[in-house]
Image (cartoon, rainbow over all chains, first blue to last red):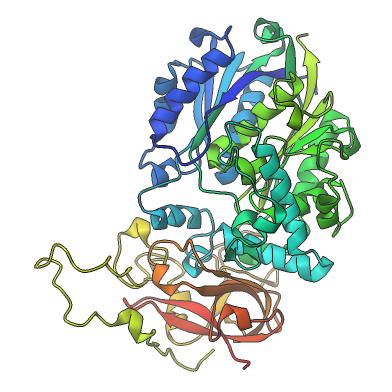
Length: 394
Length: 183
């Protein structure tokens, strides 16, 4: 493919957490932060805006959020303005749409922003919003939300491979430790040693509170530019080298194996092939740890270890700084919280900051060149993957 | 599947009004928080998980009509010899809209299960804790997700037998649930 090369040239994130602020205010906040983080960015140069937002209708009683976000951020897009919705992967959808638009020559400089407000006065209403991510009149009517579904995934993985609660907790311990050094994380400066995690209440058996990412408010934004514009913003960029996506079911009844994530195998293989690298070349990965069991199966489906050995991969520290590669140095969804539309963008911000060595040394991957970002959405029925390479402004 | 729809009483503690119930109008400060509404209480469409079921609202009304009679059914494409779940109006393989309705087996085995202990959606808070699971129906290549009743989640086992039965939502609509039959 001879499409124009595209790079991520800067980005920022708000504090993630239970925020005393609204959807629109977070869009303003992240817009202001973006112009501080990318000082050369001028509003009039941003020709396109892609807004990752999963459920503003349910969480913020607001539709038509793309122009709303543009107004809050002080942008007047002239080429493409749209919202991208793919539940938990809405943020990455915004980035891959911006990438596609720039590669196709329909945009030169685009902003991808993700905003989600999830903490409501009534958490039962918020849980209802999560329930309609599933096939609502079938799975939702039976009481399905993410925790019981991923709990069944964990149950099957334990049954088929002997994965233990302690191995699940190893994932949570690692990601919370990374979040400890991330002032934007929901669980910044909070300590979760394994013995504490194993005593937290059960949410959906066998998953405990520490196995589950949170309902989180937050926003994040990145700037993408066509190759001839990159040097205007940065000396070191995160070049988009590959993308892949795969969806094979929606209704939970059609999930097939709960432990073999075929969709992630397809999506990551496609993304890595386009980047002309293998999984062994990766220095860091931001993967979708909505639950501890997710990260364990992602190790396996990405090919970092054999099927069934993801628990050992976690317990042996192979995803730590100094391990095979650094997995979720930002703190993951477990440590940062999971504001659906903002998550994928927050992960991309981490990749840029890792490439530019602007994260604390405790979570800095050693001289990273290749990074993979993965989001699943819904019941792991969709997998979205992007591969970035550190490089200079061409 | 039971031979007929059996509207079941839920535990009376959840349904019965408190002694000397204060009138909502008469007492602006009732003692304690209001009880969460039960699933069947009429709620705005956008907060109601259960589907609209009549032939004025869905082309799958026959599924709910049969459910009311105690039969779990779905659509089948004769050309592809393909059984669908959930029931459909067009075959996902050959896209024909000429589908037939067939009854499904009433027995199945639990493939995986968990339970909702906290974080239930609106209208389901009073049901907590409740078990949910994926059930392999006997003799057909279908694995259905649904609630599992009949015993506490902590007593359920992967592989155990459950029966499917109609669940009376309480407002004229029906859904399906599973019931553990082993002691």
